[in-house]
Each structure stands twice: as structure tokens, then as C-alpha cells.
Image 1 (cartoon, helix red, strand yellow):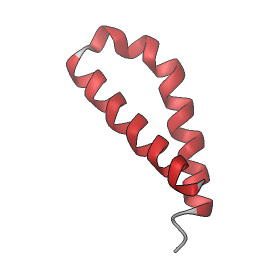
Image 2: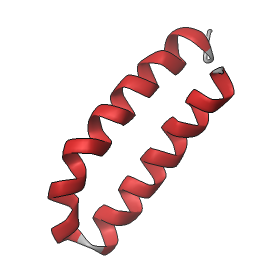
Image 3: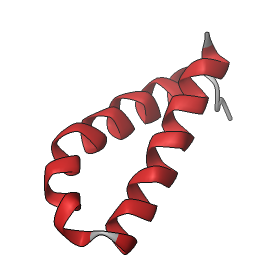
Image 4: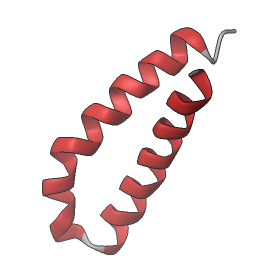
Length: 52
């Protein structure tokens, strides 16, 4: 399960950054979905997968 969440985090982050730099007019609409997914999956990864 943790591997899936980490994959979702990295895939969403990479695709979001690529989209923002290549197609700026789509970025505004994508932001409403991608940013919450990045934040939620990042927090889950921080507390479960990336323990220091």
C-alpha cells in the first residue's frame, strides 16, 4: 500500500510539473485536482514511508 501511495505522489508531482511548463493554460484547471492529491499523498508518505 505504501508503494502505491509513493508512486501516486511522484507520478502526480512529475506530471503536474511537466504540464505546467509545457501547457500553462491547462495548469489552472489541473491545479484544482493535482495540488490536493500531491499534498495528501505527500503527507501520507511523510508519516508512513519516509520515516527518518
